[in-house]
Length: 113
Image 1: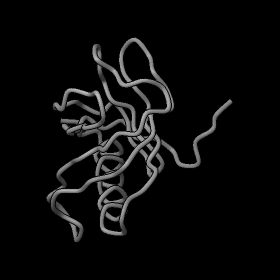
Image 2: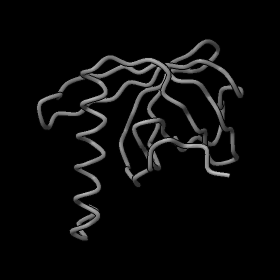
Image 3: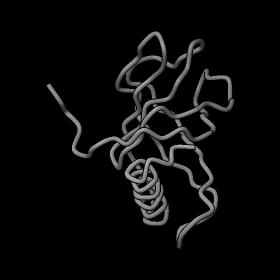
């Protein structure tokens, strides 16, 4: 059963992830929505229900810059983890909305590179 409150868009975005017991590093998103994200990760995944911090840069639109979002690990798979956004400010929310809209427009026009 689908439990998301927002649709996901296929987005390949480099992000940083930090959390207790987690080796900080760069990861890539597989899809993203206003409620969460799936990160491709093949090793050292945090445990289900762990709290982590996702950091990303978005340089377009009115909400450009570096953004941090607190997340909860809600799914752990062999190829990655599903994160639910838990706490972010209005500027990070605007950046997410602009990022999703930007990638949806690219997909609609057939320009995925």
